[in-house]
Length: 219
Image (tube, rainbow, N blue to C red; front, side, top):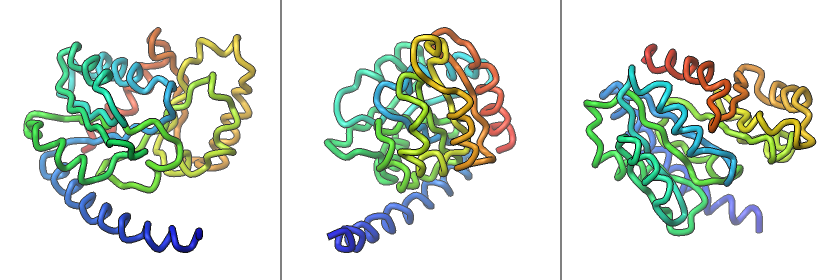
């Protein structure tokens, strides 16, 4: 059964990757940096996006593509801050795919943008295999989820260029071994910086935003 699933999955991935390369070429032509944000539900993806926007909006023009199985709750929060947001409902799929991104960017003025933040569907498995044409993947983990997630879901940590540890203000409440978490991440991905933040309070956001700003300027 497992081999049959792999045989069926590969053509889907191949098609996705071909279109992802077209997305990447378009973004490069327009000089837009695209960040694919991966996390589980409840990790604070939207609050981290809002904090990132607040830190960078004076320097960069930003848009957001919101991926959800259903609803437009998160995109409405983004739009309320005066930021262009496109809602992509996957209709049950546990990840965004490159064709969804291609359609979403058609309604954005890429010539006027510096940064697109892609909020992927909340999932620690499916999105890791799907290239969207992004410049970088970033993974968000929140303290309440536990320090063992790198052991349970190594793939998502391995493909991420940076890791955000969110809700660090709750460390005194939860049994979260921060040093152990850092060790596990570094074993899987020694080059990925780890940014401890509290998105809702603003703690640590400046360092994270500075890392991202340097990537955008380099482009």
